[in-house]
Length: 107
Image (cartoon, rainbow, N blue to C red; front, side, top):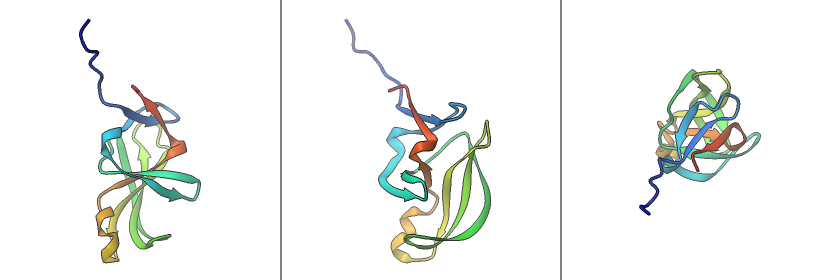
């Protein structure tokens, strides 16, 4: 019997199951949000960003935009638009999705 070919392990919106991220795009699993654990992703799909605003985070001041599911409009996390501190620049352009707002799909 041949090897079973699996597609990418995906994450979906917890409300509508819209695919929003791929497991291989996780940069870090050690992020925190107000509501618990969160993952830093290099990319996200089927989402849109809200208004950009300066937000004081645990790691300093950042320009961020809330990230919404493109299907049901639920806020899933945020996107780092700009980091003001040099040590935080690696976050720019990346997405934080809250663990309780995404569900594993195709695992």
